[in-house]
Image (tube, rainbow, N blue to C red; front, side):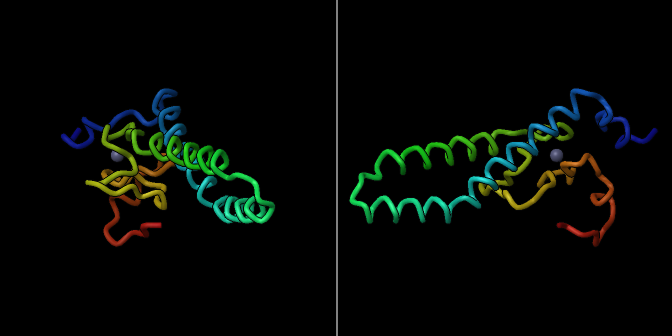
Length: 120
Ligand SMILES: [Zn+2]
Protein backbone atom coordinates (compact mmCIF):
# COMPACT_ATOMS: atom_id res chain seq x y z
CA UNK A 1 0.00 0.00 0.00
CA UNK A 2 1.45 3.35 -0.99
CA UNK A 3 1.63 6.34 1.33
CA UNK A 4 -1.10 8.09 -0.66
CA UNK A 5 -3.53 5.18 -0.33
CA UNK A 6 -2.85 4.88 3.40
CA UNK A 7 -4.21 8.37 4.07
CA UNK A 8 -7.34 8.06 1.96
CA UNK A 9 -10.52 8.05 4.05
CA UNK A 10 -12.95 5.19 3.62
CA UNK A 11 -15.50 6.71 1.27
CA UNK A 12 -17.99 3.89 1.79
CA UNK A 13 -18.72 4.65 5.43
CA UNK A 14 -22.11 6.03 6.36
CA UNK A 15 -20.50 8.98 8.17
CA UNK A 16 -18.46 9.98 5.11
CA UNK A 17 -21.49 9.81 2.82
CA UNK A 18 -23.60 11.76 5.31
CA UNK A 19 -21.02 14.55 5.52
CA UNK A 20 -20.70 14.65 1.73
CA UNK A 21 -24.49 14.83 1.40
CA UNK A 22 -24.61 17.77 3.83
CA UNK A 23 -21.92 19.59 1.82
CA UNK A 24 -23.93 19.12 -1.38
CA UNK A 25 -27.17 20.23 0.30
CA UNK A 26 -25.50 23.46 1.43
CA UNK A 27 -24.60 24.24 -2.19
CA UNK A 28 -28.09 23.39 -3.43
CA UNK A 29 -29.70 25.78 -0.95
CA UNK A 30 -27.54 28.70 -2.05
CA UNK A 31 -28.05 27.92 -5.75
CA UNK A 32 -31.84 27.88 -5.24
CA UNK A 33 -31.57 31.19 -3.40
CA UNK A 34 -29.50 32.60 -6.27
CA UNK A 35 -31.98 31.47 -8.94
CA UNK A 36 -34.91 33.00 -7.05
CA UNK A 37 -33.29 36.43 -7.30
CA UNK A 38 -35.45 37.44 -10.33
CA UNK A 39 -38.58 36.50 -8.36
CA UNK A 40 -37.32 38.56 -5.44
CA UNK A 41 -36.74 41.56 -7.70
CA UNK A 42 -40.18 41.16 -9.30
CA UNK A 43 -41.82 40.99 -5.86
CA UNK A 44 -39.84 44.04 -4.78
CA UNK A 45 -41.04 46.04 -7.79
CA UNK A 46 -44.65 44.98 -7.18
CA UNK A 47 -44.46 46.01 -3.52
CA UNK A 48 -42.87 49.35 -4.38
CA UNK A 49 -45.49 50.04 -7.06
CA UNK A 50 -48.21 49.48 -4.46
CA UNK A 51 -46.49 51.89 -2.13
CA UNK A 52 -45.76 49.28 0.54
CA UNK A 53 -42.70 49.10 2.73
CA UNK A 54 -40.08 46.64 1.52
CA UNK A 55 -37.68 46.86 4.46
CA UNK A 56 -38.81 43.65 6.16
CA UNK A 57 -39.01 41.78 2.85
CA UNK A 58 -35.47 42.82 1.92
CA UNK A 59 -34.15 42.01 5.39
CA UNK A 60 -35.60 38.50 5.36
CA UNK A 61 -34.26 37.73 1.88
CA UNK A 62 -30.78 39.02 2.70
CA UNK A 63 -30.75 37.12 5.99
CA UNK A 64 -31.71 33.87 4.27
CA UNK A 65 -29.06 34.46 1.62
CA UNK A 66 -26.40 35.21 4.24
CA UNK A 67 -27.28 32.16 6.34
CA UNK A 68 -27.08 29.85 3.32
CA UNK A 69 -23.80 31.42 2.15
CA UNK A 70 -22.21 31.09 5.60
CA UNK A 71 -23.44 27.51 5.85
CA UNK A 72 -21.77 26.77 2.50
CA UNK A 73 -18.53 28.49 3.50
CA UNK A 74 -18.09 26.52 6.72
CA UNK A 75 -18.67 23.10 5.14
CA UNK A 76 -15.53 21.03 5.16
CA UNK A 77 -14.53 18.29 2.80
CA UNK A 78 -14.86 14.86 4.45
CA UNK A 79 -11.76 13.68 2.58
CA UNK A 80 -9.21 16.49 3.06
CA UNK A 81 -10.89 18.43 5.93
CA UNK A 82 -10.43 21.76 4.14
CA UNK A 83 -13.24 24.13 3.18
CA UNK A 84 -15.07 22.38 0.36
CA UNK A 85 -16.03 25.47 -1.68
CA UNK A 86 -13.55 28.11 -0.53
CA UNK A 87 -10.02 28.51 -1.84
CA UNK A 88 -8.02 31.37 -0.30
CA UNK A 89 -10.74 34.03 -0.20
CA UNK A 90 -13.35 33.16 -2.80
CA UNK A 91 -16.46 31.03 -2.50
CA UNK A 92 -16.96 28.92 -5.61
CA UNK A 93 -20.61 27.90 -5.64
CA UNK A 94 -20.56 26.73 -9.25
CA UNK A 95 -18.38 23.69 -8.66
CA UNK A 96 -19.64 20.38 -7.34
CA UNK A 97 -16.11 19.28 -6.43
CA UNK A 98 -13.87 20.06 -3.51
CA UNK A 99 -11.67 22.97 -4.60
CA UNK A 100 -8.71 21.37 -2.79
CA UNK A 101 -8.76 17.62 -3.46
CA UNK A 102 -11.32 17.26 -6.28
CA UNK A 103 -13.75 15.06 -4.38
CA UNK A 104 -17.06 15.19 -6.20
CA UNK A 105 -20.42 15.54 -4.48
CA UNK A 106 -21.19 12.10 -5.86
CA UNK A 107 -18.10 10.74 -4.10
CA UNK A 108 -16.22 10.18 -7.35
CA UNK A 109 -12.52 11.04 -7.15
CA UNK A 110 -11.61 9.67 -10.56
CA UNK A 111 -11.34 13.04 -12.31
CA UNK A 112 -8.78 14.18 -9.78
CA UNK A 113 -6.31 11.61 -11.05
CA UNK A 114 -6.78 12.33 -14.73
CA UNK A 115 -4.70 15.23 -16.01
CA UNK A 116 -6.79 17.20 -18.48
CA UNK A 117 -10.00 15.68 -17.13
CA UNK A 118 -13.18 17.69 -17.37
CA UNK A 119 -13.61 20.20 -14.57
CA UNK A 120 -17.37 20.69 -14.81
ZN1 LIG B 1 -11.31 17.92 -0.29
